[in-house]
Length: 341
Ligand code: NAP
Ligand code: GDD
Image 1 (cartoon, rainbow, N blue to C red):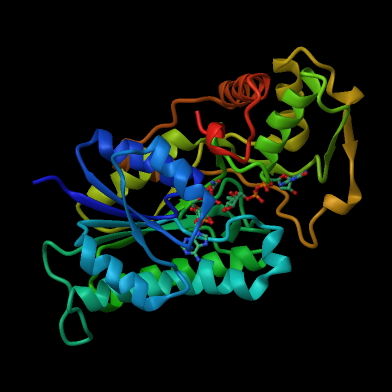
Image 2: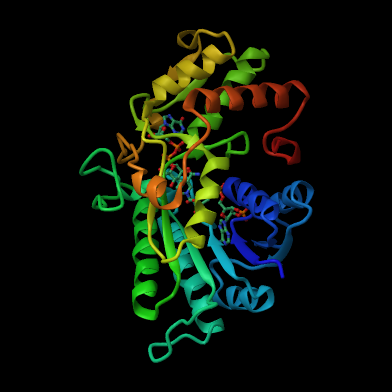
């Protein structure tokens, strides 16, 4: 029988790539979709026709229990979150509820549906759980590169909420013997990335300028450095983590870091444009507390899981610019169905 996976965050970037990867591996894939008339659900239905949807919300404990009861998954991937860091200052409580407490509700749904308690721990054949932890937890980094043993110092309400989910996942593993793991993933991008994140904002900005649809691109902190990889590579790592003999946490990244300035240079040059003519630094886009530098040490994943990234930073940037030029030249709207190649 096909293994069954339940993915929260199915309408997001990673949910789409993970669903495609699991379908290619012979899985029956279910996605948790929220809302009465969520416009992003139709995009999923169009792109991922073989994915089945179940209604639920990370804010609603009962809906998660019902979803797990209905789907009877072998593996649960908790990708759902408020994931845009600046929004976490504007709606800190909501971020805590969805990104932090949502992990508790998902773990509880699995625990209750599996009949696990303090006197009855998980046995073989249990549901395996993946939590989407984040390099934002490292925040003001204590060492570079960052590994599984680097202490956390989150710099945003989002990072704090992720740290809660991370420790809770570890705690359910230790308290109940659950197969629950966290992937500490560094920034990963693609042509399906939300337009609010800097890589996509830049690739869309370059495409608009190239096509004469805009005259400038406004950005915040150009000196921040990130370890940017390709989302399609990172979802393979999520799957590998749940196939390992024992549940453990892993850092996933490329081990290379670039500044926003370098990203901008690469993206404009991919379209034969001189970035200095178009980019405007806007102080209002700076964050209340910044994460200046992230760089992964992915050695454990390479050695224990055999995971390696396949797309370089330069290839990723060129892929995103090319995709957005194509999208906008054909009259596509980045917020609509057509935006997912
Ligand atoms: P994304 O594109 O922003 O997707 C977020 C998903 O969460 C969407 O499907 C959204 O669904 C869902 N969601 C929001 N509120 C929800 C709620 N109350 N109940 C259920 N689902 C809800 O994020 P992503 O880039 O794919 O990232 C996936 C996960 O990995 C996130 O947890 C993110 O924090 C984490 N992460 C991402 C990166 C990265 O670089 N991409 C790195 C480290 C960790 P709607 O369509 O209904 O809003
Ligand atoms: N979004 C955005 N917009 N970021 C900008 C801009 C701008 O105009 N100008 C400069 N930046 C800088 C930000 O200050 C930050 O230092 C960096 O670009 C990256 O910003 P984002 O692309 O928004 O990503 P993030 O690093 O804050 O968060 C992403 O990666 C995390 C993993 O480290 C998100 O995907 C999180 O959900 C994820 O956990």
